Image: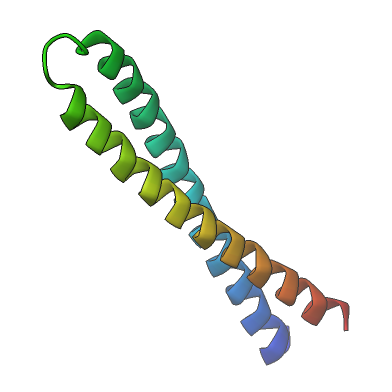
Length: 86
């Protein structure tokens, strides 16, 4: 395998591993969000509503950041695909 092909293979592997990590985190945050949304309804009358609402907002912000990371990773894979096609 040539040096270029070897470097490209490693780059693809790193990009895919990065995306896997981000998707795992997306799933984790999604599950946390769902749990907190349920808790918010459950605790509405107990006064923890604002605390849970703030946690939901924080998770949503992290989720949006992850979406950006995943989009960046997908773009990198597109670029690598073009390199392989040439």
